[in-house]
Amino acid sequence: MASPGRRQPQQERAAQRQAAFLDMAARLIGEKGYEAVTMTAIAERSGTSIGTLYDYFPDKLTLAQALAAKYAEEADEHWKKLLGASLKPEKEDLADLIVEGAMAFVLERPAYLPLFGSPLITFRSPSARHHLRKAFADALVHWDSSLNSDQALIKAQVLVELIKALLSVCKQIVPGNRGSVTVDFKRLVRFYISE
Image (cartoon, rainbow, N blue to C red; front, side):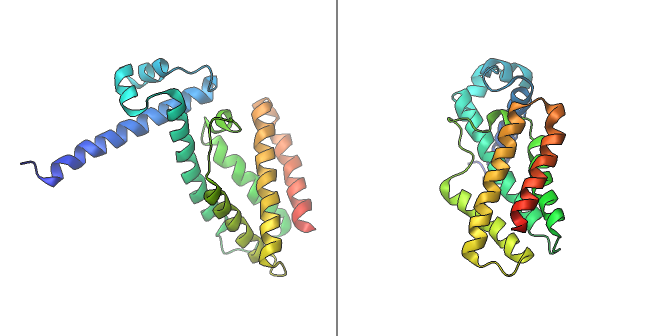
């Protein structure tokens, strides 16, 4: 009879292989875009057979959805850490923190923008979306104690929509032009949170 400890390395190896497939898919999607990437290319660049890849992901959509779920989990941690800082920034700093925080997150994940906005790929469930907005609302109340919880949630919703608009624009333009777009969105966020 096998000891319980013998299964753990197999599970760990499987988790590592799955993570390696996701990392390779992210790299390829970041380079070529979602539509251009094939499961065969992911398997070849991962140094494995297509059958092994299919053992983990039955199709490209499932793989992309797993990547989006991974990004959603990472985003929760990213925003929790960023917005949970005990500092009380000025409105300019808060706008910079939000916009630069969004850009830093997506630039560290090459497949994020190519997958963003796809009707087939959902990054967050409705409850996860509410959780994120609540984190933004809590940060806004920390910044401006005159806001009540309803006002803060509305402002948080608008800020999340502004971030989504920023990402949508960045997805559509040449990467070299993202700096000026970032500056414009900082102005928008600064103006909004000042009202």
